[in-house]
Image (tube, rainbow, N blue to C red; front, side):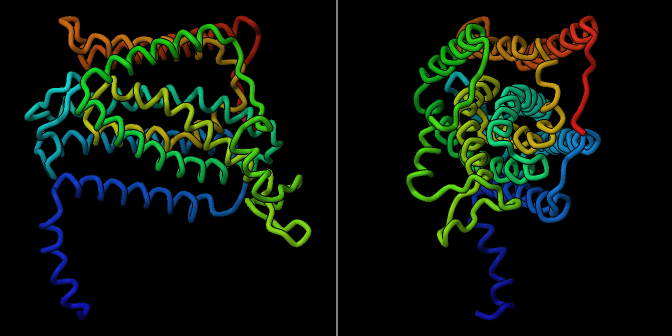
Length: 352
C-alpha cells in the first residue's frame, strides 16, 4: 500500500473506532506529549530543582488541569466524542446525559481529592530519598519514571474499579468502609517508618542482580565487577513505585466516591499525578511544618468514605457540597499549620 493510499484509508479507520475511545486516545496522546516535553526538553539535564522552579512548575500543572477542566465543560456540554452520554453513576444506575457544568464540578472535586491525598505520598517519598541518600539533582529523574509507572498502574486499577462498580453495586460499600478504616488507621498511627531492606521488591532485586553501593550519575544500572548491577537510584525508584501502589489503594476508591464516570476518574487522577514531582520539591523541606495536614487528609478520607456509604440513601451528598467540604477541610488544615508555625517562631521555608 502506498503512502497516499494509507492516508486515504485513515478516515475510514477512524470511523470504525467508537467516539468515546477517541476521547481516551486523544487524552493519552496529550499526556505523552506532556511527559516528552518534561523529560526531553525542560528537564533534560540533571539539576537541583529549587523552590522558585518548583513553585513555577506547580502553578503550570495546576493551570493546565484547570484549562483541561474548561475543555471538559465544553466536551460534556456538546457531548463531543460521546462524553456525557450514558454515564455510570455511583448507585449502579446509568445517567443518559451529564451536562458540562456537572462534569466540570466532578472533575475539579476529583482533582482536589487526589491532589490532597498525594501530599501524604510526598512525605513518604522524602523519607525514601533520605534513606538512600539520593542526590537532589537526580531526584527528578526518579520521580519522572516513578510517575510514569504510577500512571500505568492506576490506569489498570481504575479500569478494574469501574467494572466492579458497574457490575457489583455493593462494592461501593466496601470502598466506603475501607476509606473510613484507612482514616481511622491514619489517626491512630502517629508516625510512618521506611525500611526498604525489608521490602519484598528490594529483596527480590538483590536476589536477581548485584547492587552497587555507589551512584553512577543518574543511571539506574551500572557495571560492577564486569556484571550489570543496579544502583541505589534504581532501588529508590522501586520504592517510589511500591509506595504509589500502596497509596493508590486508598486514592482510587476515594476518586470513585466522587464519580463513577471512568473518563473523569482517569483524567482527574492523571492530572493530580502529573504535578506530583513539582509538589514534592515544594513541600519536601516543609514536611514537619505542615503539622495539621495529616488531620486534614484524615478528614477528607473519612468524608468521601461516608459519601460512598450514603450513595443509595435519601442523604446522598451533592457534588457541589462535596467540593466545598473537601476544600474547606484542606484550607483549614493549611491555615492552622501556618498559624501554629508562626506561633512557635518557625517560618515556612523552601529547598535551596
